[in-house]
Length: 517
Ligand code: ADP
Image (tube, rainbow, N blue to C red; front, side, top):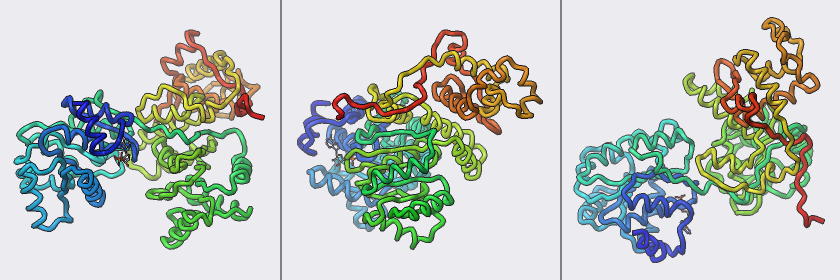
């Protein structure tokens, strides 16, 4: 059957080979396994159900929430000589009746339907009269309340499938790779988690980096000077920060636009146009900017402040380099911004969702402290196995030697344990550096053997080192009323000398290629 799938790929679509993930998804479906396929937008998800639809006998039903896309998809299929149709609210009664009749006669290989149709039991009765080997659930994240576009009608998909005379295979497709959304999709559509296909999240023309330990305004000034002709976005966390940055850049003579939810629609549209038409090279914005923006020549995306989680980060950073040319994605990290994000999470969400969002924020902080390949960090966060380092990111090009930091790590870990594993990073760093803070005396932490053991280092430095140990999973964070830290199993191994800790030496310089002049 796979051979047949390859022939169809060539004869109907004119492609010579499958992209990564497509073949795996298609062969799982053809083996009769319910499957979830996670690929970024543009990754080529449609082929994953269109080809099985051609191979399998009967009519594949595609659930799709976007009426406008349905028509495009069907038109493209018809052009390729594949009989297909759609059922949604744009059809007249007559068109609807005719389409359903043709479907009953088995005239279509694919039938696209809007999810709301499944709310009607008479429609499901009609579906029962078709031979349906496969149900493709496009934009499958709509089934999950964790997703960004929950559609209650998606919850009817499973019961509809159960009612069909022949049990169909289910293929869920989405670009949303967050683990909890994926779990929801699998649970609600009875997909075994091992039948997950995730690929294509790496962006080979983007180089990721994190800047910390230097003044971010100076960094920005130098960066913009070097890249003054290029288009770029600078994201800040709050409207106030956007306004402040905008004023500063504007005063220094840079053609800059701004965008945030506090501006009127008219102002926002005008500013967006200035950026899209290249009148303003730089856009300073909150995360309100960017959805649906199609500007291909964005050469850099800088996060002036820490984004709230990896999903938002990758979505925002991913707006760089749509044209495939090399582009940069930079986070300017400062530990105070973690507080800003915590505050925003606390303000914006219902109580029960807060701990989960704080965990996600912690992973974003880990991203800023890891010494692993940043692209790899991102794609493995999304569940993809990426065996190779990207060779382009700030960590891959970091030429500093690694030094052994086991002893220092042991000092920190042992201090965390001695403090009872119920305090935060800041207080731990103060104990280690021998601060005279009153709280320390009250708790008697100035009596600990680890008190002041790192007094030659600054609190900030030690806090950063703790962040690094968190990113290495030697220390864990528990989201209580305020975050407390504890030593993980892996951390205990370091403590007893079973594992060592390597860290890059302090000064960061870019690797210079051998053939550089
Ligand atoms: P998605 O639904 O994941 O956003 P599409 O299915 O619309 O992506 O595919 C995106 C583009 O990639 C389309 O133009 C499609 O023709 C093209 N494409 C898909 N699969 C292949 C392939 N195997 N070889 C070449 N191009 C492909």
